[in-house]
Length: 502
Image (tube, rainbow, N blue to C red; front, side, top):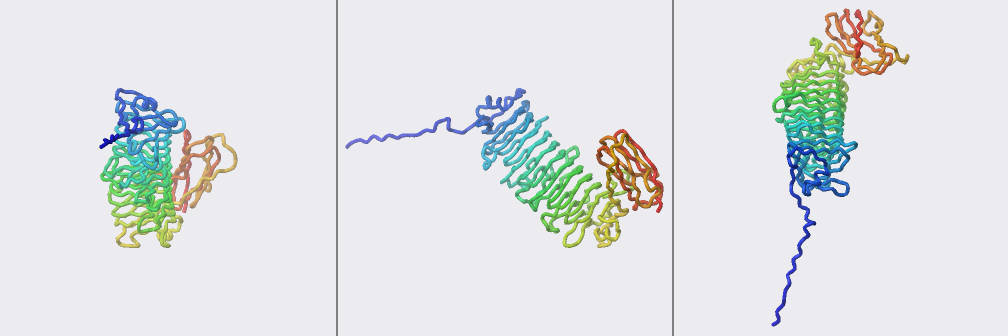
């Protein structure tokens, strides 16, 4: 019998083909490195290929170390990779840094700025992460960035694109767009006090979940400021700003444009708020008045809110109050300008009925010195729902009414000096015209006060170019008597007397 020799051949893969990298932490010796230093020292965790920096496994910047990215770059991260900053990252290129996934269908986990101090992300495009940009126990500057297409597939309740945890981060001049759920958020019981300034926050909540574009909870030691943002929705379950703290939330919400969301601003619980100068309109995209559509919604006896100088219009409901909420929309007995009223609340309707103000609480509400779309008191009454409509509702004190005025530029050249002219007519009843000259670009205020010094009206509070101007003052809500009007700019103050005779 012949013996058959059987050769067993095993094929081994070449080691160079195995795409396995160890995690890497920078040395912790106060190094200040750039991306090329990471390529040199990280043992393959960071590589450079095809013009891109690739982070192939978890990368941690140690607490004493700094990473600086000061040139334009594209940084791509592998599936499930975490880029953790415990030290400092300074990302501030001439044009942009893109932080993205190697394969956008297989997302990296997150970039996490964790206990870091003095970090800056500027001109950074951050996209296609699973958990968003996570900021924990630190307060970096995030400026001129684009945060988009994050958290897709993440089924967490909020999964914010910028996820705050005990942070007072400054988020400014940035675009937050098309993220899966919340754009900027923090847990209900997590103390945060971010500054959210001058951002474009649009069309987030692609998941169409019951979520707002900004969603925050308990305050940190400071006050949250949400100022100068455009917050515009697209998906019908998406709200504008929502707050539901476990604990207390302190916030200033001012000069924002909040449009085309399911609702504009919803505050629930223990909230101390100043809400002023916002345009809150067309928050009606879901279309169901039983499920939303309020420009402003306040819930709970813990609400302490001062609401002034807002434009609230074209929502399904203008203002809705529930569960003993008692914000102040104007109280002329208090000299603080946050109580001046001067809100424009009108044209909010659903089911063929105008609902500009709905006090679904037993509390009396102060809403003096506002404009309700008309100076006819009967028409105003028809748009406000309070005790005359149901004995269960508290009264809304909406008198006196206020008529908004506009400043008119007079086409008569540029003056050589600041000047405030005598009003005409004077004495007057109830309207007079005030002319004034502005010789250089200035922040201009004209306000009216009575003989006791109590401010009764703000006619102008805005920046004006050099020119000659006029403004009308309607005193239909004031009693006969002597008043004064004052022009105040940078470096110039002038006051004159008015006599109102009715």
